[in-house]
Image 1 (tube, rainbow, N blue to C red):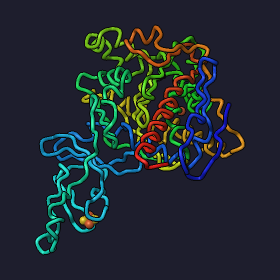
Image 2: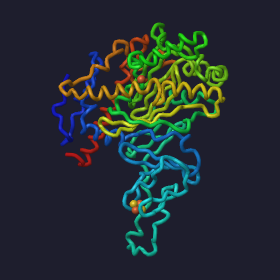
Image 3: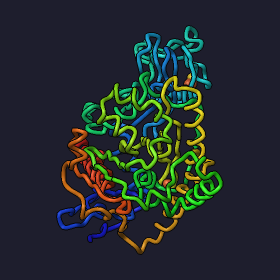
Image 4: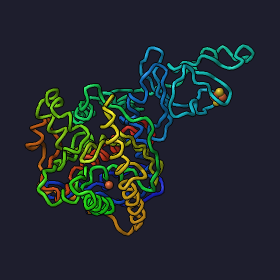
Length: 464
Ligand code: FES
Ligand SMILES: [Fe+2]
């Protein structure tokens, strides 16, 4: 494998991004260079060319549902204020005061007709219009100033797919539905599990981990680590089963590896990917009592995919949803630095579900997914250990993207045909295969976006 020729502290000129991803799947090779997890200048370019030039997930409509609701977040490094105006229309602005640049809204979420800047009091309405400049009449502004616009700057592209809200700072992107492509089928499955739709439970956990954001992108779809990194959870489950016997109500993770469960994955277009596993104990899912209504509503095929296959989905680059043997979790990631990432995690629930099912769901969520759970701390520790290990700069390439390549096919397989999708690659096999080919889609998109971004920067003369 070739190695990047040089490791500058900043990118002085065009970067040969092809040297970071060795994509020769016809020869049985796919490898990722370790520098993309540790080099500062690549992180800056990722923010610019991936996060700030492409669709990224902002929030879910359940977080901003009524007129004048607002939600603050980021696109890459840039602060964003999402609002609903008086008519309930969705808007997104850069969260920066047009006066001297302060954040206009300092609060995470709420409901306000007006956002008043805390520095000098300029005030903007929920449609982003500057409606008040303090002491305007006495200001002796020039006609040129008065003629200038002082409204908040709108984010150029804003879109929603079934309640999932995305935006792009680059107006020149694919239509959102095209960008999501076949990932929409899996969003549909997530959304259609309840007749009245799904929402994020109010209240969430937020934490940072000392590792690169792509460690999280991979981990969500990494079945290989489950019975090693989460040994503690498996041991706890074993003891619960021992103590409770037949009264135990939950999946037996250890036993999953001993039976012939069907698993597979899809590398989808535009960087998205999905991993699925046959659910060994669908009867413990909170939705199970409603299986007949679900089948009647969605048809047997979709009901099977919903209830009997656990699905972990990544919408590249920053949102993930798991809906598997345990329960649904929604994750939004935000890169803060080469080795620092912020996570916002939520419990994904049906609107108006019966109290008993909601209780079961929340307890399952707390058990494995919440930050103080038996699962998530294991992953956070693994990210920290990876990031520290990756500082071994004498080592160039990861060997972590090869499992399942012998079973991978270009395009779809029988599962894809069942779902009516056309992935870039598909893979199917026993659980112990723990496929790693689905990550190829993430890195192909990484490479595509980095090259596209650099091409644009060269064309505009931003870099020479
Ligand atoms: S910075 Fe906002 S009013 Fe001055
Ligand atoms: Fe994990």
